[in-house]
Length: 84
Image (cartoon, rainbow, N blue to C red; front, side, top):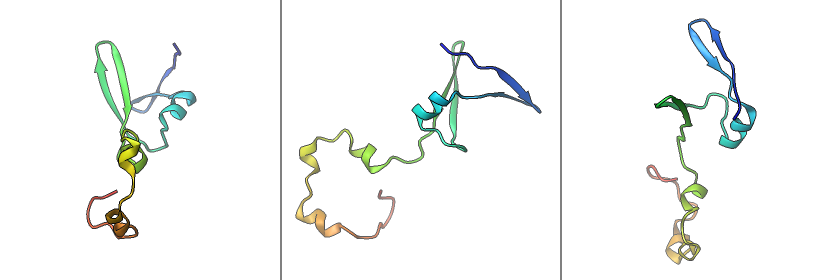
């Protein structure tokens, strides 16, 4: 278990997130985190705004990912709404 130091800046208390956690969670400057209390624990979780197509398809059976003739007809089309 690692420890961090709480600092004060104005009216805020600040904790630096260690680099290994930033890299593992792929957190970028300006990223939003949710904050929850779980008993005596403080839990920060990165907010994912959008899923990538790769993330959506990651759990799909590979046999279902074959492109059909109908699919090919949509290739290169502009998005019409909230599609990926």
